[in-house]
Image 1 (cartoon, rainbow over the protein chains, first blue to last red):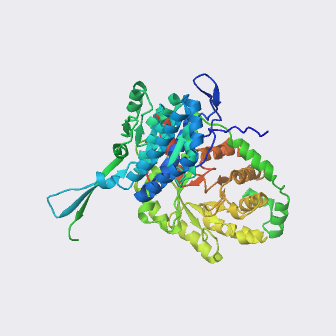
Image 2: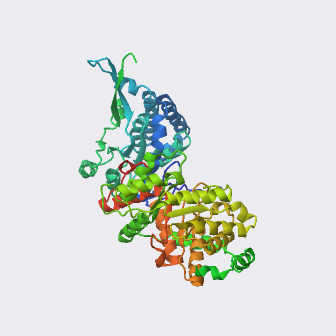
Image 3: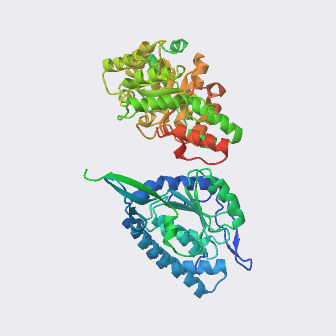
Length: 279
Length: 315
């Protein structure tokens, strides 16, 4: 007889897996009310630490070559592939779906990383331009990453929602603080374990689990966060979050659950450069 | 100086006095410091602590790459840490290298910061490896340029090899130059003193020799101002007050970067030395990055939202 070792689901902050500084955890159950796990219940201090970690990681991630970022995103897909069974089991437990449906979702999640990995070194070529100007100057417009993006992941498909949120943000060269679904957070934490072993620098992705109502207002008002993805927030709560995100002019978006290069550009800003000709 | 009647100034009497000091219970010191660090300071107490910590900062820049412009912007920040909020107090002092003292003093005077002292690091900071003659001249220079606080380093080599008299005489000599023109802070560089027993001995040695302040570190060596070290030094000034009725200040420096760190220091001061030391005349924090974190935490308390480094100055 072997010992049944239960997994402790923890937070992912600055490349480490701490428990919440508050020491709290909460219970998640499946549709029938059976116990699944006790994930950590992050506090606003954990959120602050996560934002700080993302901020500190940003300059080196943004200045890595787009090609290198693409390689790392592809590497995430490779690592996820090897752990797909665990993802399938967790999705089945949380979403009460069949093994087949869960497998399709994992497949789609992995494909999403590969898809955005390809976009990473192409997006600036496609979005940038050389502009005609009346004078002896070259004039370029280039897309650059925004900074730190807060993501409230769409929870309908618990793993795919997280990946659809993270991949475009990372492909653009941004760092992310992701709030996992309150009811279905396990895939996000298992994904964090993949991120930690796939050359994603510490702090580039930070994942919190906890109560949405407690954390999202601080995510929206934090002055260090430059963009918000509210795909996992209902429209009524989103209105209040949009208001508190105005102070530092955050870019707030909410996306449908599909891949698009537009999602990458949503968290990029354009810089225009003038360069004299013939100097 | 009533402290001096504890010894007659000779190395023998100094050695005899230092031998009477009890050894430090290292585990006990660590545990007490760790226990005090768990205290939670919130809301109005936190606001008070943040303002107190700001007024205790020796705003420091000790880089080889310091320029006159950087010193001037540091001085402006010292006087008005948050340009958008005049209710933020000014810092305790500005701490710079010897040759920057004149620039700092002149700029502070020109912007209305006459009440902010300029501290200079002297005596071949940070190593302290120079001849006595050079160290004395270094100190004289700083004072003539307008420094009213001198941060000197002790000769750790001499201390560790047991030449206590040499260390003592050197502090006395610098103190003579400072006389009533400048406060003398003596840097023990606790990161190089190895044991807490040595920290206690060096603290007493500095106080007996006439230090107005004892300071943990140069900031160039790690570990710097760890909690047990500060605790031992605070105990030393408290006990020294019992002996001599003279209150000596304490200045932790190096490694104190966050508001949480600073508040932990204040808790130590209150609990170990007593409330009299919660005062910029007797407690200073040597720091540069700390001020920005204090300002950001202060903004959080005022506005309710976490602030960003984009809203405080870089230097």
